[in-house]
Length: 236
Image (cartoon, rainbow, N blue to C red; front, side, top):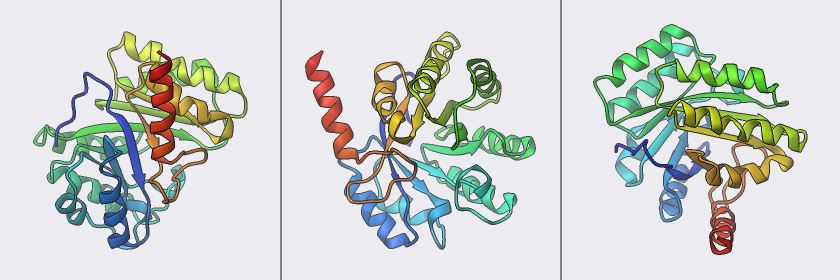
């Protein structure tokens, strides 16, 4: 299902379960409150693509995060990327690939994406301990812009509010380059950025399913995100 890159996608509900049946059930329950649903393949004990494609109607994002970038996938890179290639062949809305992945693996994905234009590539970068300087963040974003991906994602851990401001300010550079960007901070201090990013041009934010597990520190339940956004919109 192709997603419009010209306008923000909104709220992505991230599903992280070991059991496939439970993951599908939670995803179905989340369809009414999600604009996009992320399936964390690395969290599944036996990751498969088809059950989610067949069981869900909302646009799907498939992520297979390796251990070296805060995920749970322990297998080879070839096996990890293989699942993303399978998702692309099913014309999912997005797959997520880390900027630090081997260039040849990214090239393989991009080659397959040429034959499946319904699917977009999110190129992601995470720092679970802190937030780099503005120059470093700008360099990361520039690499993403030049990567061939359709959307960038930069998520860091906020240790103070200056960290939050540096990450949110990336939207200025992204807009100048007409590059859709997901950018916010993790942790308690970063929670405000998960809402603010949507008001500052961010492509989308991530939420936990109601009653489900968060996939990153500071991730809020989707119902709380909706409630807070409604209050902000009403204030407008």
